[in-house]
Length: 116
Length: 166
Image 1 (tube, rainbow over the protein chains, first blue to last red):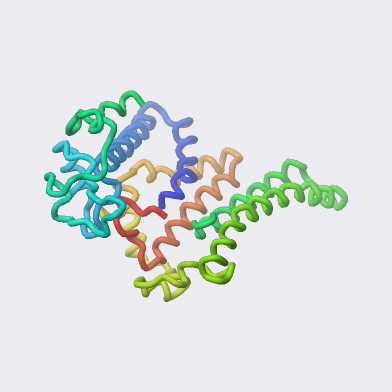
Image 2 (image 1 turned 90 degrees about the vertical axis):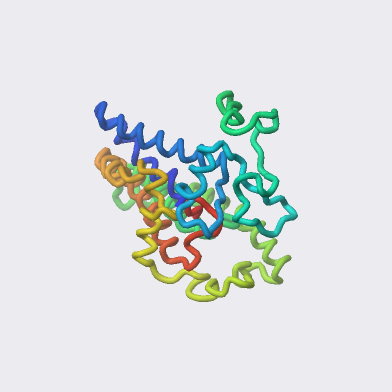
């Protein structure tokens, strides 16, 4: 469905143009929701295991809330991932963000995003 | 389009829209101006054909080198995903339960992740009424196409993912 989103987003422009304050507020709320979930997803893992049937509720949000970011332990030479040890530092993380490279941990490691 | 084969259909939608807009730019036509209009479309069609050719050449070369024939699609040689050999590379007919999952499901649903998209049908209708029926139809058509395509695909869930990628 991702490939269709830029096309579908064309439909949001006339809604914004014709919307009053309440309508624009709803659109803005929907946009903030989407941006927030995107932040949660990309800062933890955009590829949660297929065995997790509600990825946001079961993995992404709890990990984000706890500041357990960059979860992916799989490097180029790893064939598989132990799903049970994705969180809690069981396996070393292969993924990283700029803040972690700078020595920050948890949610503060997302601070460099503010400067992008 | 080199590897995203399913994008060929939306590309046709966009090409048809471009041709329609070009022909409408020339205004209403009688017999003589219709011939002129058709001639005016030729440069556009040539540019579209050039774009398709540029995308197709690396694919044909890759297929020839990897599989021995420029027209052998890699998915036809896929091992371990047996359902790819049913229907058209795993695509059969849309499943209503999969449509529901793709739109509302906690596993791969679009609307729980992006509720803003629920307003799109109304917005596209407004766009159509503002004299932009062509773009509105193409945008809606592309969305519907991908929804039905995914709902028709055996491996619709897309493996390790937070949303359906294709």
